[in-house]
Length: 283
Image (cartoon, rainbow, N blue to C red; front, top):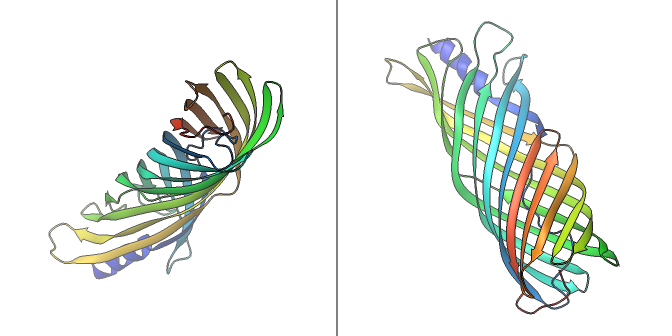
């Protein structure tokens, strides 16, 4: 039994490099709108979905190990504060909370045994970000602008419990911790139609993060347990997609917007409101 338990511990001590198809974070209108010396405050909500496929090496063994993080979904609530550096150039910060939910699957190894599956349900944790946006060109109702944003998310921990693929009386029990940061950039053309502004353009995103496990191997009928941990990381190559949306100018100070982000295997829907107390350059 001791040899089996040590083998299980080695099986789960995984160093992981991942290929990720990811969503993002809400960005809003990809153009400057505050005006030089002006301030703007607002709030935004985003819901994203992304899938991860990870592979690594089991410590002490030559065979690779794969697992999947399926349908990672997150809700984000962020407050924003923006400042106008110049007529066509703003900077801003984000602060708020985000959660996460998905299915974690340790895939069956290339020997006899089955996969291990359980759900990740992380509560709301800290979310932070910084960004900048600019307007490059205006011609009649048309304009071209861009946005770059860096954000960091750490949802709450989640309990993970899964049966051992070899022994039905053995269970892995512990907590999973997830955190990640991402860089996003968008360049978009916009068209003004009365109080509405519609925009669309290409979208680029890069993501890195960690998913760690701290727990024990529990055998039915035994009091003693074997400590068990793993540390994993995922590193997304640049992902190209589309960023599009619409802004509604309610009055001289209030604006509402709705956006979408999409890549081959991911999506995000965001909405927000912006209030400009001292009106600068028109949004």
